[in-house]
Image (cartoon, rainbow, N blue to C red; front, side, top):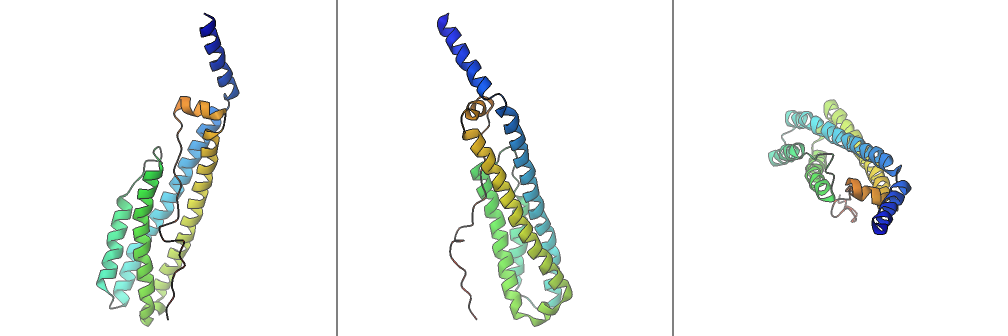
Length: 192
């Protein structure tokens, strides 16, 4: 009887130490889902701009078809990849990031090749789309940072004592971060 009473007291003490942690963990989890929604929204905006960009390039320049095909295929792969906001594990974030990274690489190649086409560089539609795309890339960067900040706060909360007891009892698990793309630590080489 004493043993059951002791165990019960330990559980009650643990619950009282972390009773308010549950609600804050729920709020933090919802914040992460909201930030993830914004990340997806900004990536979708980029994906929506790409067909207009490709059509403008096609109409203005006798362009390398393989580059346009790469952009179109990368966009298709990136828009097919979806992540359930309740399953933001490091693995799922990496897969999503890899799909988006392929699209970024293809767009980068498209933008660098356009330098060889003076007609395209002076086309108002192309310049407007390019500016919108650059603005969208900035939005993506901000959204990813906001998401990582929310994940850091949440992960820190669920790993801290006594909140970690509540987190384990109610199944709160660590979320994944966006990380720099492979090779991002190397400065790009510029050749003229």
